[in-house]
Length: 257
Image (cartoon, rainbow, N blue to C red; front, side, top):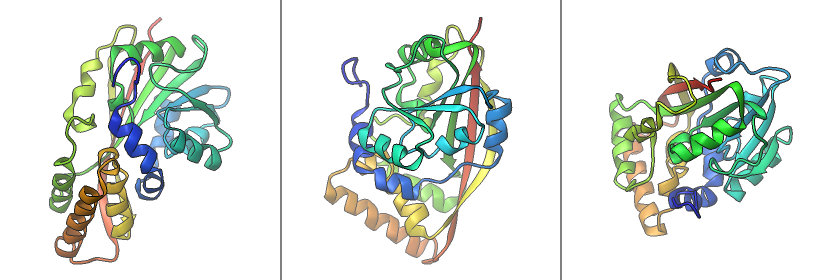
């Protein structure tokens, strides 16, 4: 990422190519997230929220369900087009975390679902601070595979050999952005979650929706598919239905003043 191009190459290429896999393979969020949005972020009728790094709109329906007005900000055109067609109730905006096309102090909350690790910088936080009203909330949400389960850890090891410098939650680097000037300390909540279905969907398509996997050359991507299919056949005995365990971590800070 540079000042001229604020989107990491893996995100720009991978998410442009992998929008279909993202829609099909990504899990939903736990039911508790609806109450979290209402109580921790104070969302509801009459409020306005930014879905920042909105992607194809995987988190957008949770924001819409609160009754708030949703502005979906996304820099990758292919993903924003998917969101627009699926959730016409949301206002689609082409933009990024360092260039949010909204006025100063115009929104009650900003939410980054599966996204903040891409832009966890003082510049992005200053831009988020700019658009938030005084007392407004910033919410950060991640669905994380539970690698305490043996076969999930084996799956993760297949993927991480291709990660290189791609930002991710697990590195913990995003935490270096906090404490942040003008914001309260981070508050963390955690929920358990499961993604059940055919392994080709909840394991393989989920893996192919990963930015740095979607951005691979065809030969390398074919190797990933082979390795995951081998894992399904041997670690999961070729099961036709599997349950992928997830942990959902949700963080909130409030704009001071």
